[in-house]
Length: 73
Image (cartoon, rainbow, N blue to C red):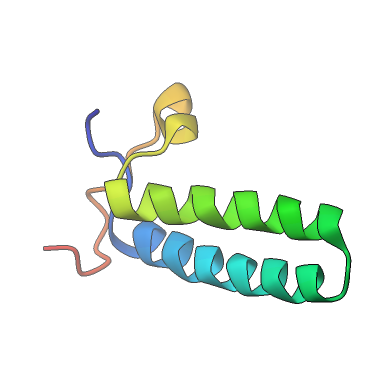
């Protein structure tokens, strides 16, 4: 897998992933299990993208954000 997520894109994915996991925990606590599952899966997916620097969607659309100036260098 070649890197295609970097810089600001990677930071945004990490922050949104954490936020969605918090939303999932709150929804689970409020017995909104379907909402918790959806938010949890989305949050884990974004965190996986941020940690591995690879996104399948970016790959399919030919998007590469590793060259942006988000402080990754």
